[in-house]
Length: 312
Image (tube, rainbow, N blue to C red; front, side, top):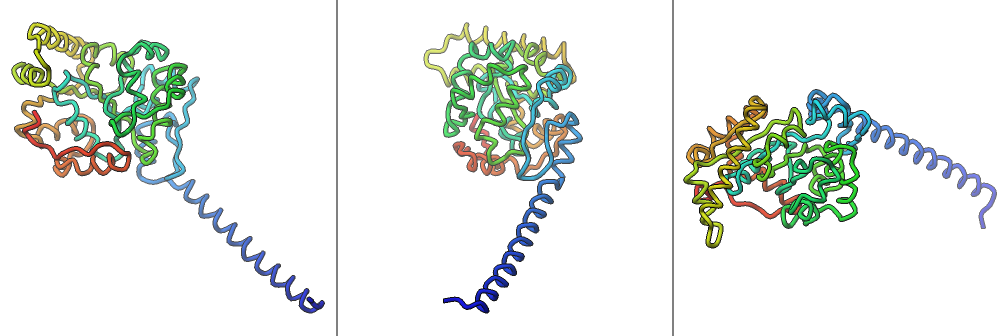
């Protein structure tokens, strides 16, 4: 049994160790607070580019905060800051949009899934009628898609504006779970056919359009389709050209056209121009797509092969 002396000794030790634990807890909380409040270089970049306050500072404790009353009105003149969409990539199917977007997403803090299609809907609720993108948005990351649940997809339809849809996409999609600091890259080839309307809905967001020569574009389509209808392909190509021209007439400063026929001949020159247009610094190492694959492997995307002219 404990004597009174033992009891006093036990109590003294309990007080001592309790004090140590208390100090340790206070120190841990202090360190946590310091990490939470710390501003890293990315925070500064985001605060300079997106002054509306969407991006909250703080390393791994960063979170997206969207105030529809404040930021939906902002999105009407500065969609980029309100939505977190860094860039849009469009162009005919099989024109080189995929490799162009992968080169762009090799840069730090830029990421997106295979295709999106949100901006094809006149209003958020209309996205339910945008096929096949409405269905694709719930496909898994193993298919290089956004992997939303059906409930999360329904919530997109209730957004106040398109910018809020993107904010929800960033929060819901596991694509950004490991890269919460990344801004959104929306690569959707189908935007090209109504690019002026897409750009009406996303003021301020730069657009990169991939274009092949007519001969190369028709050859690409012919290789990929069984029994291709040449008349139909020519009509589609003409529709894409008209969509691009309308957008160029309306928003000449927001569009950079990358000739992917030339890109395959001199990818460093072509991508240096794309990066300059986006305000980024091109790194020739990005041609290996190693930087993109590192992100993709973490997310669960299929790995892609290094750039090769045989892709065209």
